[in-house]
Picture 1 (cartoon, rainbow, N blue to C red):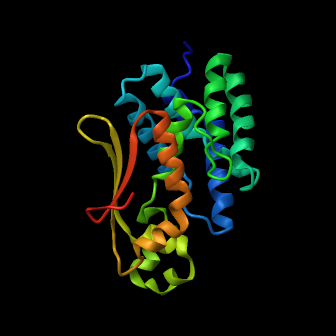
Picture 2: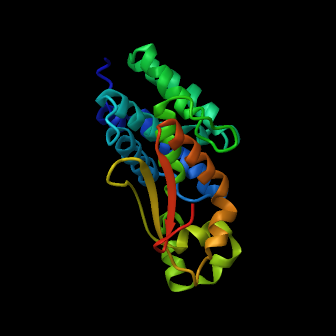
Amino acid sequence: MSNITYKYIKSNKDIQTYINHADASLSSIGYTEHSNAHVERAAQTAYMILSELGYPERECELAQIAAYMHDIGNVVNRNDHAQTGAVMAFRLLDKLGMPANEIAVIISAIGNHDEHTAVPVNPVAAALIIADKSDVRRTRVRLAKQYDEDSSGLVQDIHDRVNYAVEKSSIYYNEDKTELILDLKIDLEISSVMEYFEIFLQRMVLCRNAASTLNVKFSVVINDNRIL
């Protein structure tokens, strides 16, 4: 086992620099927030997904690390950022002295998290896919404060509109751990459920496939109604 912990990765200045610059790059082209708030939330969710199912503690921590680093490839380009990020993560983690067997799990997960090429190749990858794709919330809209005062700009971008409409988002298991539920509260005056699935259907199907590899069902509940 490596002494490269999630806490250590979070405190690494080089990794933090790549996360910050990647988010700045996405901001410049109008994408939603991919900063510390996103990667830390993804890390927390990925850990929970495996931990609640009884996976070994270190495997849960590898999921945390993969989720924290999963978007660093955006510093190079949004296109193929998953594969670029996996190569970057290999170099960073290898330099830090993490064992090859752990690096292999992490970079496989990072390289398989984008919905266009993603495959849940291992439990860590499955946890990362679900943690990443389930992070939909109002605070990911970069101009949320402005929209609070004047919502006219929301009609211009469906991604902003859908994220902004989500007033509450949580993900949890049912009592017997057979079902993983994404529970959303959406302001239907801002965005419809149909619009949510217009941009997130592919991601939700991917989450269902990822959950299946963990031998659980993935469900989506919106405004107390089961949708998927």
